[in-house]
Image 1 (cartoon, rainbow, N blue to C red):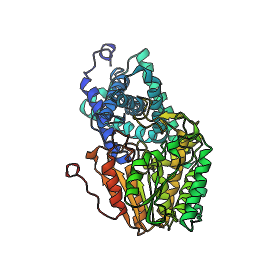
Image 2: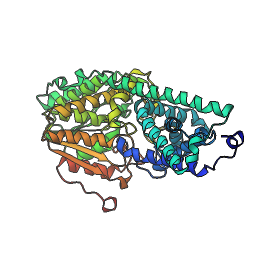
Image 3: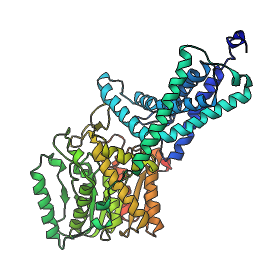
Length: 509
């Protein structure tokens, strides 16, 4: 080819650049259902979660950029460069998509929250890239190769095109080196984290040693001992373990375990409603929760063993408070309720409400790797809502931040529960799962998997799903949550306890 031909203006590839961005974006959308991650919002999420639009736009823009930068701009369309473009699109799309989701969050443009929002985005980016990054790089690299093959077939002259000299000749080489480094880093990190042992022996079935209360008086005495110990701690008074009693052992006692960073105050209205129905109600405090200082770092010291211990001692106490023992819990408390249902035959019912078996942004198959990463990395305190750095109005008792080490300990318990559920029949005779289809905090497929494990052993599992159309938030219990509907949810729970099919509004079906 002559020097004049080599310097001639190449065919216009604007449409191919747009097509590349579109192809990468569509591939990202199609891969979401395969991962087990759930995206509920089409355009924007008021909670800053990824929506279908932010995913499509973010990946599409990055895809078009790198296709132009590595192939069109340098006039070189090779299979290797297509693969390199795909790898870099996968890497840079994570922070871009998360940033777009944050920008569309209502009230997120306050400059005073830039640092907290940026830290939240960085943490989520690192967590997802080091656990699932290898899969996304593989998928988008294949898309890049397929695009080059399609281009060669459509425009054969691009096969022989030569790249430009100078700086633009160096860029693809640097990009290829970066892509190789990312592939090795992502694949290596996942391989290490996936095989890194998580010690769950102390959380397995032999941990369910029990000493049930033999009478109502003994049960109350144990609760008074718990409250006496709590009196020596710097707790918010509303966060001490709470007992609502009719002064005697009754037909049914309901236990409720609160969620991560919350405390017994979360269930004050629920407990009052259940008490009015004639039940005794006990709402224990999970260790490391409820400090009067809402900026407390105590949650970093939470362990899965503490969660098992409070579950067991509470179930023991409940034996003296009611003839029928109903164990329930939300989120991290839902893990405890599920664990009790798996290991305690004296729990007549165990109802897990939106159990935190895996975070929604992590596919179930990467749960082990994510837990290992959080356990071994330095602890970080992360805002639930980095845009406001505060709780919803009225929640003066809950922590507005969570500790990544505490979160990892809850996940460690969930892994122990899932492992036991897969191999051993649950002991509780009646099991329930309340799944909120609009929940963007926890993995609903993981909850469905738990139900399937239990059912495979012949257990009776009542699975109730709250439709996506209700648009309920993760915290279904606390009345201060703006995305909640406590009156409706409380009645659903009562129906589940009574073995009645809950009534779902026709507009939500």
